[in-house]
Image 1 (cartoon, rainbow, N blue to C red):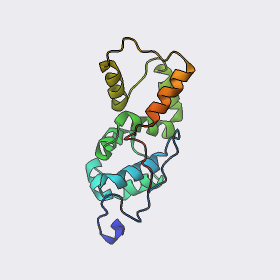
Image 2 (image 1 turned 120 degrees about the vertical axis):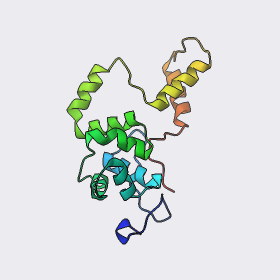
Image 3 (image 1 turned 90 degrees about the horizontal axis):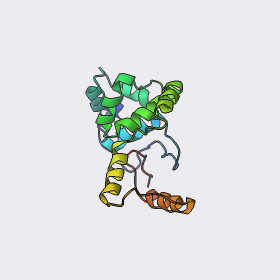
Length: 162
């Protein structure tokens, strides 16, 4: 059932059509990401529109379909409403909507990594292991570490559909 039938849809249910999850290493489109994260948030388009200060849910619908862009001033608010990392979401938005701006930002921060909250937690956990100045000494070490990390989930990646 859809909201146009005045029935609230709560979270993913059997038969609910969600945007396809991107393959590992692929960057999702903003529209697909917003649509999917909204579906798994349990919120309706109206509830999200209210949180963002939109007068109707039409703007949310247009963002989900790709007919409208997320207003840059709403990126942080939308990330919070969808419970996603705001740094990751800002990266998605800038990469897609303003690629030249994103390239300039990446160039400035090329040697100064901007970390998401999840990445900071991983580094803090690594440091808590009290291994002084850990190093991946070889390509084989790097590969083993990547394989180890691939076993963990990402709260910003679109989950696999059952």
